[in-house]
Length: 355
Image (tube, rainbow, N blue to C red; front, side, top):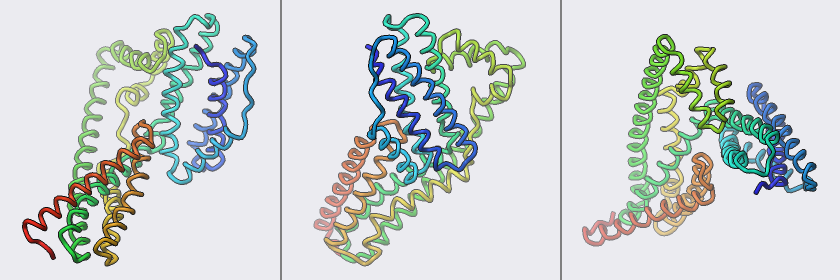
């Protein structure tokens, strides 16, 4: 069943969100993108309003809840940046695309209404493509989040284990810093090699596309068309869009094999910085000279806050429910630390280590 009122409210809410984000955005390119998105959402709301009127359905007024919700998006953008905010918006666009695709197969819409809905769906697909990680620099943010996560969990577990063996807080801090330094080096080297490989693969795919364009342009057209259909466009709409794309060799290359916009060096530096940022909370109390139960409790408290925050951001970046991911990361991180602490106690007892 099609919930016209909900669809109308959702589209108006999205329009309000984009308008709120516009108020604080300085980047000219992003301002243009957000402005286009807001205008499109307004058109979509009008479509659902027209459907409601034709069926005698009264639509709810947009009240303070929606306006507060839009302002919360603006607050989220202030705290965590445009990239993560856009990722949240992208996940809602994906939900809308799935829902509207289901509507097209229903008998409750006339052929004319389905044609209009297909245009709305086409807009939503374009929105999702506009809200890409490349457009808003999301790849850097994602690398940072996962780097912080790795550093936090690994060093928390190590420090917890050291705290059960070493009485001197400076030794615990030194052990944590050594583990953190080694993790920073290994993770940054891994990020460098991974990005380097992606760059090489992208160049290789680009050359293949160039060869295909020279030998058989039709096969490239079919690849583009298939990708558009998978995004939710009908065969006929995808065919028209694909014909436009294949007219321009540059557009084809960008569509089939998008260029890697983050350099290998930049990726390595981002990973190193984020890993260091991650291992600071569990080590900080011991660096301050706090040992024993006080140092341990404070280390766990700071790490728990960091785990919940990072888990939430990981959820946002990976299209998983943020609070669910937040609690999962908290449980796994603290669980790993407690297990390592228990191993340290066992080692201290049986190996008679107490420094």
